[in-house]
Image 1 (tube, rainbow, N blue to C red):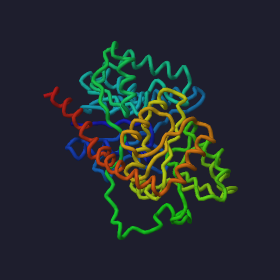
Image 2: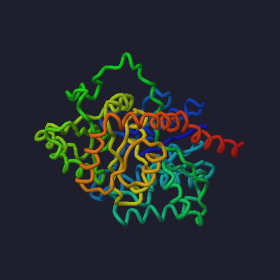
Image 3: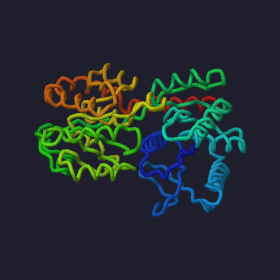
Image 4: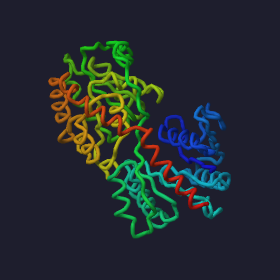
Length: 387
């Protein structure tokens, strides 16, 4: 099949789109990632994963119409140029909307709606915008061949909300990393990549936040309690990028127990993460999409062999309890995180030793080599219908 994997970013950090595109290519499909162009990025390139990347250049002015012309140009250019592909893998609601336009131009086009979140309940979007997403899904979700979700609670939410509107089959494809090869313990340095980068020793207890530095991810709460760590063994490390980077750097300047590690290439994330003593999953459940989330960082910590400390997110709690790989923080206040971190530090290394068996089980169960089977089953079903 010729598959357009449509994503409305510049495809420089989207590891889910990368894994899906590589998997489909390895399975014999012809894949083109359709993304947005940014300065200093090639418009067309052959990715090392074997697929093509096409970045769309927009020419319409942003003003005076507040981006309306740009959005219209984007939608029509992508829909018109890529309508002759056999299938579109639509990442998020906005790409699905463009896919519906393309399907209107060519009704035989197959749409896969990949919901990276609970799309109509996302953080940081206006009430009117989210109402528009929910209207779109109610009216048009039946035109998708299948819907993909990233967590079981989101899957149940879609079934409850849209079953009466002709919801197609819903499949779970979690955003898990590739299986990390075990380290050769004899050749493992006492101080790994992350500790070397930050000048920390093997005796330091690293609590690692990794991922996007954005709102409602618990960063403010972690920074608020960080002054209580001064002079102690616990070191709070932020690895990633985003809008709160300056806030983090300011705290680093005044607190020797807080550290900033710039984002590393996706292929190196786990080799840095495995240096941590505990991984922090601190997403605040301020909307249904966040309440039901299963963040990438949770699975990355698992593959890196790092126990996790999570707040009260149901799918995260289920994994932690089912595998015995961490603790749950009761409450989102800074003092709640401080208390939980101090307790884990006091119990280390015995706590990490106890978690090892569960981490090994989780590593075997929650990796892309297994998860890709669900993805390929979807496209096998589509091909079977076509035949």
